[in-house]
Structure formats: C-alpha cells, structure tokens
Image (spheres, rainbow, N blue to C red):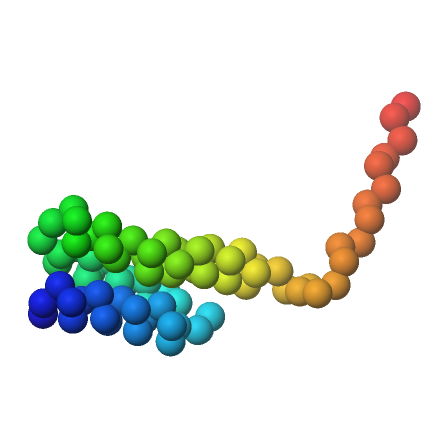
Length: 81
C-alpha cells in the first residue's frame, strides 16, 4: 500500500467510524500508521489519528454512563459527630 493509499484509508476510517466501530477503526489506524516509512508521512496522518483518538475518548467516557442524559442524584454529606 502506498503512503497516499494509507492516508486515504485513514481518512475513510475517520469519516466512517461510529461508536460501535471505533475500537476496530482505531486499532486498524494504529497498524496503518506503523507501516508509514517516515516521520513526515506520519505527520500527514496525525490529523486523522488525533480525530480518531478524540472520538474514542469521548465515546468511551460516555459508554460507562448508564444514566446518560440524566443528572446524578445529589448525595448529602454525613454529619460529623
């Protein structure tokens, strides 16, 4: 795969990934990044990698919130003796 083909695949992963596919897309993107021969080439891919990483982080942090969209109940502090 040429560098341009690799960049095109990274772009495709970035634009087509969903919350349910982000882990596989991120893993594939890392593998693609490792095949790039130079730092300059990897720098060209950075915008897609950063975008995928940000989506992964946001979606990962939202997936653990079972009460999504609902405020957390307030907890009253225990009185001190």
